[in-house]
Every structure is written in C-alpha cells, then in structure tokens.
Amino acid sequence: MTGTLVLAGTPIGDIADAPPRLAEELAGADVVAAEDTRRLRRLTQALGVTTRGRVVSYFEGNESARTPELVEELVGGARVLLVTDAGMPSVSDPGYRLVAAAVERDIRVTAVPGPSAVLTALALSGLPVDRFCFEGFLPRKTGERLSRLREVEGERRTLVYFEAPHRLDDTLAAMAEVFGGDRRAAVCRELTKTYEEVRRGPLAELAQWAAEGVRGEITVVVEGAPEAGPEEVDAAELVRRVRLREEAGERRKEAIAAVAAEAGLQKRVVFDAVVEAKKAGLG
Image 1 (cartoon, rainbow, N blue to C red):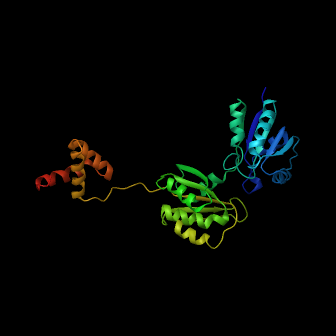
Image 2: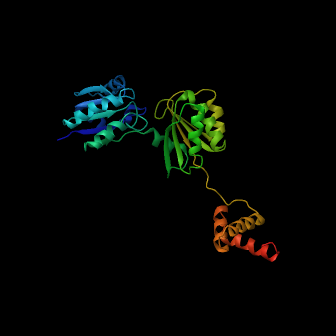
Image 3: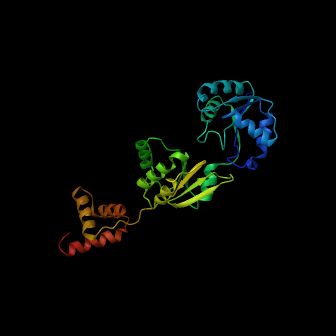
C-alpha cells in the first residue's frame, strides 16, 4: 500500500494555536519535510515533541528536486508530513508541487487544519467576507505590480494579499493609484503575536502611514470594487444610442433594451426618452 501525505498547518504567531493533531503527526511521521528545519526544531521543542522520523528540508530552492524523492517515500508506504514556517503548506508556501505529484500517483493526501493568515486577516478587517479572493504576493517590479492590480480593478470580491514590510508603502500607493485612494482596506500586522496591529482606513491614508516604515508579517485586505450604479446619461444621449443601434439593423425594442442595460436603467426610462423625442420631431 502507498503511504499518506499530510499537510499540517502551523501557528502563524502564538504557539498555543497549534492544533493537538500537529503534535501527534510530528511524533508519528516517517518523514517530516520542513520549509526551515531550524524553525521546525523550535516548534517541536515548544510543543514538547520528539520526531522519530527522518527530517528533510523542503523549500522553494529545492522543491523541484526533492519532490520526486518524497513521492518515492510515499509510494513505498511512508507517512510524509509537510510543514512550512507558518500557516498551511502550498498557500504561498512550498507544497503545491508535492501535492500535485502525489495526486498524479493516486497517493492519499490529507491535512491537519491550522491557523491561516488569510482567514484571520479577513475576519479582523471589518470588510465584507462573504466572497473573497486571495492574490498572494504582488510582483516586486513597479510596472508588473501595477499591471497585476489592473487585472482586478473591477473585482467585486474582497481582495487579500501578502506583502513584505519594506514594500508595503509602494504596494499601498500602487493600490491607491489603481483602485482609488478612497477604497477601504486593512493592513494586518503580526497576527496573533505580541505586537499584533490592524490598521483600517482608505488606501491613500494607509499608504501615507506605511511610508513611515512598518515591521513584521503583513497581510493586506482590500474592499472589492463598488457595484456599478445607473449611468448618468441625459435623454438626448439615450435617444442617440438607440438610433445608432437601429441604423445598425436592430429593431427598436431590442435597441431600447440594450441601451437600458448598458446604462443600468429601466427599459421604461429609455422608452420614454425615445417617445418624447419622437413627439418633438427628433426621433
């Protein structure tokens, strides 16, 4: 029988947040693959756990090379535990390649749920959380960063980003430029740690605050784009648009419906504008 790959969430700050099963899996795994073996050692000491299995490093630099080795361990029946420095493996951390390779070989993959910076920041942000999307880290280069932000300029869902503290001011300034300085956001710093801070406000205001320098692990939550309201179009413009569609071959009924949909208006509003224009000899 093949083994099992276990993705284990680790505390993002407070060690007391570690789930009980994490200690059990650390003690019982045949192989523990860790993003940083030194941090793993500190984690096991804090939990009072001794790992009996082989400990190997598994980080961005060796992920591609080490994945086949771990897959072979799994094929041979081993229970492989994957942990990263904080949070859930594969979420902006090493792990995706190993999960994909295990799935490809029909190897069982399970998880030990644990703390999540994404969900914690969302819950604390004060912004809508019914629908959201996680965008990870933005590109470091200014042009690429702006381009990525423009891709989600009209996104209605709440947006969640990770960012390095020394790039936070540039990122918030770029967000203010693309999304608008009045767009609401929350900067969540050092979540669950001693100096936890959640700074809420408009993007422009947050960018100004961050320019003074910020330290710690950062998660940024940004309000989604506002729902488009009715377009402010006068009656003459509505009639002009209907006429253009009619000249292109559309029937008046379909033209009125299309113009109303474009402007976010009731069809009756556009219909009345067309009728009034016809009465005035303009239709």
